Amino acid sequence: MKRAVPDLLVVGDVCLCEYTDHGHCGVIQDGEVENDASVYLLGKVAVTQARAGVDLVAPSDMMDGRVAGIRKALDAAGLSRVPIMSYAAKTASAFYGPFREAAGSTPQFGDRQSYQMQGTNADEAMKEIRLDADEGADILLVKPALPCLDLIRRAKAEFGSPLAAYQVSGEYAMIKAAAQRGMLDETRAMWETLYAIRRAGADIILTYFAPTVAELL
Picture 1 (cartoon, helix red, strand yellow):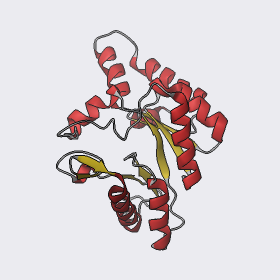
Picture 2 (cartoon, rainbow, N blue to C red):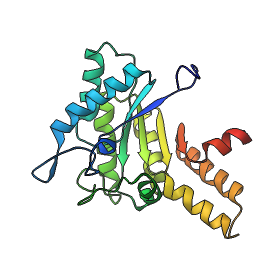
Picture 3 (cartoon, rainbow, N blue to C red):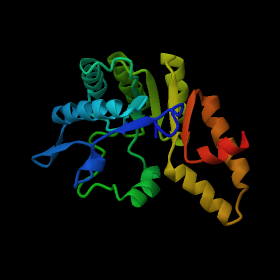
């Protein structure tokens, strides 16, 4: 990609779920996700991606301490200029369903609620975001976007760091499905949701609507 389009910003999703047969985002030991062993491997993944040419690494795994671990690994590899966009507040959401079905990434046992956040406690979300900021995250990300507009607003107000929001597959699929049934105007609904995310405070929006938006802007 970098050879074909040198000016394209390429972001690497740093996680382990795509490389495991169990579908979890970390190493499994005795039936549980082992945090520290996972962080070590995530650092190796980030270095591999950076050496391949990604401009920015984005850990989405939600292991504790992974931002610090990745920063240490990148610095040790002479890649200190590679920034980290951390999935700082990622809730265990029903809105990931369409992506998981398409990618076949649903965990083979249990669920991800032991390391993804419950969406009921905004103060806990701010604590998680602060930890990632203190560990050296260059960009903070909230996921999903629409169910977490309050978290986006609070994070922007409390931290002031560059803030990203991820409009995930379920948010996208709802609009597409409703539009296909003639229940709403797809383009207008798309813009309304994106404006809402921007108003809440997001500087960067990740969305499946990106190709459509790029054509219309």
